[in-house]
Image (cartoon, rainbow, N blue to C red; front, side, top):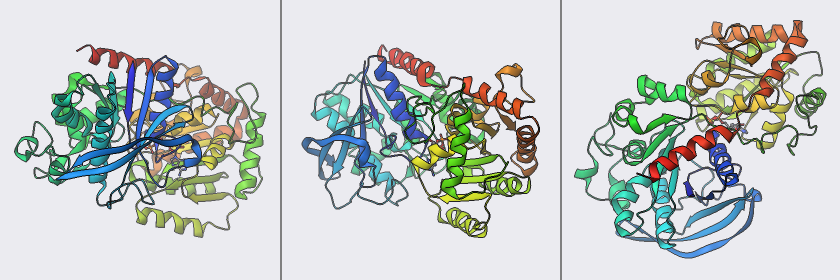
Length: 490
Ligand code: ADP
């Protein structure tokens, strides 16, 4: 099958969170199974160019119809860890992608509407007719609209669209000026409840709703989150739309790229290890302490790696730092937030704890350090308020780091409490709490720290049970292929 991914992120070149890992990991799995995969991305100034091989202009003069005229683009090609990637590079005074960050600008909706249109224009002009276009999150929600309302009639009539939602909170809610810019026009047609009109703000359009309405199939990233999106406030206003389209909606658990996340070969950690040789995990723990100037002591290291977003339970992360320090353990945090008030809160905390040799807070994005933290820590916390899938806990399992998670979304589908679970004792792999409050997280952390200190052999058994889980793309890759097969034959 010929599959084109259209996305705003792809690991490790342009990565903000799990979306990037999914685009690269799923693409690799599909390619290993003999499919042709091409990935279309924006050409951001702030990308990691050191991870692109053979970058060159593959298509010089792509004129993308826009507003009353057209914008001139170049399309670059390069390999990202073996994946074939095209990068859209518009030459306009809007400077859509020549910025310091990936997101967070007032014209984000316009930027990604343009990207969606340019990606289709590129397919159309180059005569590519993929079997499947797989697009992701609000940034590419207009792709199926543009495909079926404009490009199909022009001859781009073969592809079917699969649309994956990684986070319902960010939907691309915007004004109707997008319609004239993209040349969809006809506001009376699109600004309708059955099409692009936002369910809560009737004067606005909603990109994610557009993706749901127009795609041939919609997925979200875990079975539990699919249920939550349909039946709880976690659909963020799109529950009704999902109900209408529920026959083409399913939850598929994300996999993890086991080539990238593998402690046996990971080039970003100093000591390699596996389930039969955990000694080197402890060598990484010492290396981590050396790097972050933490005290060498008989204490477990508890870590948090992730976006510092309200979604991640920021108040509980903060509480966990103090609880850890009061209970004879060490804490490492690696995270950042586009919201300056959250960033500032943690920068202030960092300053307060600066002299504490049992604690290190790193405010920023650092792929290399993240790998060392996964390898060198004993436990990782994820007190998320909601979590569509979560990759951090899957990476932690793979690196023998025990996850302590709140039972929500994909965390509920992947982590099973050591003491209280329906799973057989030998299939349990972490600690789980339910209420998003201090008592909840403390109860789980207390049990984890207690086991580490008082029953080290049992703790090691728990580590190994986690490492035995296989959350690679193998199974979910097949589920996506089944969906592609189903929609292309319709
Ligand atoms: P989300 O998609 O909500 O951000 P996930 O758990 O699905 O959360 O994926 C997070 C991914 O991003 C993981 O690969 C994690 O290691 C990485 N990550 C998040 N924040 C950082 C950071 N500050 N530095 C390095 N890697 C990070």
